Length: 498
Image (tube, rainbow, N blue to C red; front, side, top):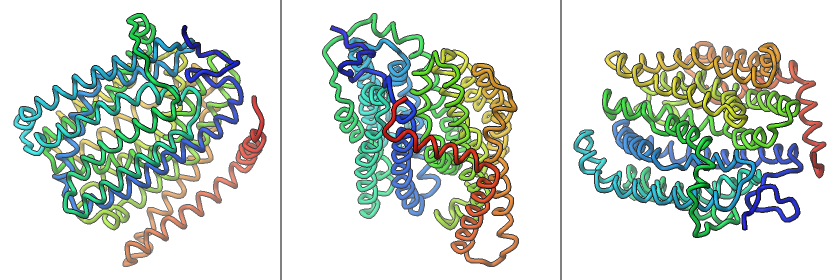
């Protein structure tokens, strides 16, 4: 007997939340933020320690291994889990069939990678790969097991379980990594900590999902999921294949790849800490509001404002302080990563809003359009690197930023058309964070010239303190009414349902 996603009397593990959406969205953002905060703090701690004992070349070797794992891992249909979130009439045959297909392919791909690792190492000219790849291949199997139960938790908007999972998994991973570093295995600490993180996440997610796979496989069920799933899988390939890291490693070598990976990793941590907290909530919320146009428009604009409110000061602030902050926090060996990190900060400003556009476009029936957009965005990196690499990493980063600035407005216009809003309405929703963050960046960026000779730590503290004070003052001056309205809605949702 199938377990319908619309069973209201005795809610199924497969069900959408059908009441209290506003309250669930508020608490969802809270738990999502707690989730990414724990992840970012622990990741940053490990990242800072390892960056002080490893060279850019060491980072480059691990980055190349991660890129290879990510590339071959796109064969595994883990992204089909997003089709479980999007599908209204979800049944157990869908979840069971997808679980076994995903796990089966993951085992095959991981085993093949173990056998081929010596050959890959010789072709890439990086001997360490023959040792790293067999260990990292375990991550593929553990990550595959998370896809279905994680999708079910997201459907129910029970984001507190992700926070619990993150705390446990990242805590164990960080402890293992730091223990290995103190015992002289810094490079291997990066490798084993990733495997430990995936394994612990799998155990906690299975427990939290209240779901266990049944021994059932239905080709028809996979066909039911294939339209959205294939586009989600294509999107995952574009985002997770790490084509940029593969090409950079093969053209510029491990040292330049290490600088790029370092800068990109900082960007990812900041992105997860800001817009990443909104992504899981907006995706499932927009999917559940397919037929409620006015509420969908209201939620979208509110989340754009909230994401800009948090994301814009983080990325503009990082852009301004990175010339001082990176050498101080990570060591002078990472001076070459300052400009790439600043370029990623500019891209981060767009990603703070892009998470909303992604959820809206994909989950409201335009997965094909989003896939084409992602293809243009990600695959254009290939000719950029191949043409510009003789000029060095900084020239490549400049070109990537210009590419992003050129293509990103396409997604903005698409989202506007789907919602039926004007450009003015959209810009108004993010106007005050834009003005406040821009003013803050100009002031903070001028500090080193105004205070020459100030020790790095004192300069960084002064930049952060003054920048935060200025940003807060401008936001309260320009958006006091909007903030008061958001606060009123938060209070109204306590104990209420929609």
